[in-house]
Image (cartoon, rainbow, N blue to C red; front, side, top):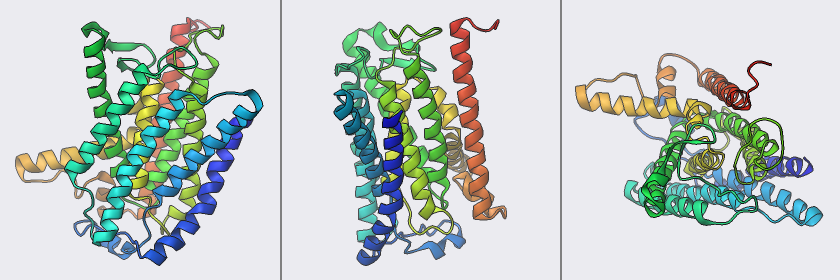
Length: 368
């Protein structure tokens, strides 16, 4: 518990202290955000607002977890788990792609950064490396960091092992690439209003922290009553999720409307990559669709808008992603953001109820 508190406090302090320092640095370098010309006209006043704020978020998570890991090592000799390292790798690698994209934008002084092909290639390389290592690296718990299959909660309802080990790894690599691409883009699409992505991500990571903590108390081999989970080092994953939630909270202090800094693709891609990694390593890839429900809505609104327009030449929404639609309906930016936070909170609460209900059902406790 002390290790968890240390991680939370360090992550929060890093963002609360580091973000204003970054704002000053970005101001001096004149690295301001360039606003898309086809977006809401009210957003044009945000042109020049400092970006690259995601750098502080990534550092806060790394330093928060690092401080927690150092405490556990000094006190108990506990060595960091590969599961935690891989989750942090997913976050940092996707954040690196976002940083390259953001840096290219501010250098070119336009809203176009890394090419789609370049970003896609980078995601494939990093996601493939994550997937292979998650299956083959040994862990302290004896359980692999990931299992080759698709899971709603814990047990895969589709296992890739039917195809043999080699093909199972290939299928899993494809699956992880899809998840990484889907979640990074979904979270990225939500980063269109002041505080929307940071606040929603904070809520989502709190949800995953609760799930990972519950799994750590009901770990296979722990002799706990009820259903147990064959998950690798979930307590480490819980600490990372808490650090991410606190990093988002600290950043939100400066990112709420009117924003003093934007997280940019550095932050949104990093958070999306971490969310995907947590869903894979806690064996809840399909439950994540509910926990990250707001991000799914944002992504699907964009897919529907583009697909329908190409097919009919007409639009379903006034503008996509859907948060812009409500802006053009007359909602203030603050109202859209707070209401979307509420929607994400309801998704997370629903996901947690389903997760707990699954545990009760598998434990045979319905009659109690």
